[in-house]
Length: 476
Image 1 (cartoon, one colour):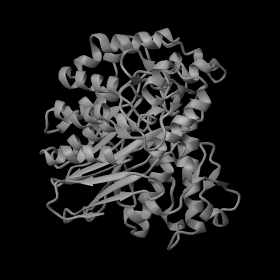
Image 2 (image 1 turned 135 degrees about the vertical axis):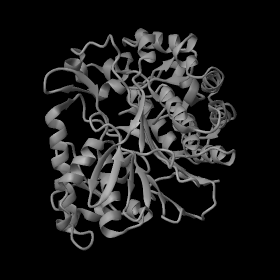
Image 3 (image 1 turned 180 degrees about the horizontal axis):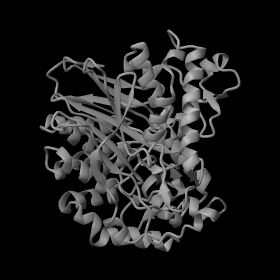
Image 4 (image 1 turned 90 degrees about the horizontal axis):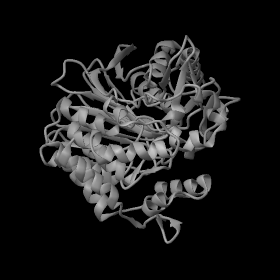
């Protein structure tokens, strides 16, 4: 997928409709940040199992000629002020905590996208809502992934709420693949935010509806929590590996800490001349060391599977964006719908972790969008869904590029190795003979597509997708 110099840009996302929304922004004079915001807003409509306006949050990494150093929009969730840490001891045995109101953390997607806009977008924010509003009000075709997630939700939750069924069921059954799905209540919220801006999220009927719905289901969210979401924009963190600078999010809250630890632990001399048994063992050992370091400091509540979504965007001026965001570790988050809004509420409290060094609770996620630059000025953004395997997916994309000169299109297509958070090796079937004793990873466990964009030194843009999964890309 090579785009010639002079094209306005390119977007890659988990759904074609969302990529088209980003291309819409580029065609109307927006830059890659505009495109990423429009794509993310569209994903909250067409990928509701993995993300939403009342979702957990995430990270957006941006490299742009206008910035002295790459920037990161941190819109990770936070803990409601009234949350009782003693619930962490009981949570694995209490179903309402896993799925119900107590599972809802402070939703940060909306303020995160507004912060990204303030950091360097060109178009009015209201214009970026237009594609998402059209998708919500006019409808879109249910994807195979969404149909599968709806079947899963129906089986796991038993009887879903009437509000949920009104959105995603037809004739008493979960929407099927190919059916047209309209979500007019979500369109109304999008229109409100387009008109009122961030004030519409923090004041008035919308935050009241969200917080009262959470409290009514046993949670602790308050309107003051929405106003104190902790979203910020700051220089991205950096780690050097083999002469390449890799930039990512907060290493404490995101999995960039795991990736950085693995890159530092990885010994290039052990990789071998090509992918093989030496390569696999070196990657596994580096990941195991990085996970051990993280878990020495933090005690996660659960082993998160982290259903999520990822996008990349680039423009002709040289701005590159990678953004990963989520509902939390379960499809459709908590499965609660805030009354009169159509907004699915996250289940981010399942990702709270206790600080082993002496108190404190923090959301701990595996999200890991990154930017990296090579010595010849070739630049890349890459990221992926995939739960605890996200750092492994991103690590191998970097290693395959830096050490074996693979294009990211090739790198994302290769079979992968990973480790559990306990350091146990896992790999795809094609690699089992090369890594004896590893657990087999089924393709379906990746929960969605990795994606990347390369900007070559001559300005040519190359978009890359994971061929294991359906996804979309669009150029402008």
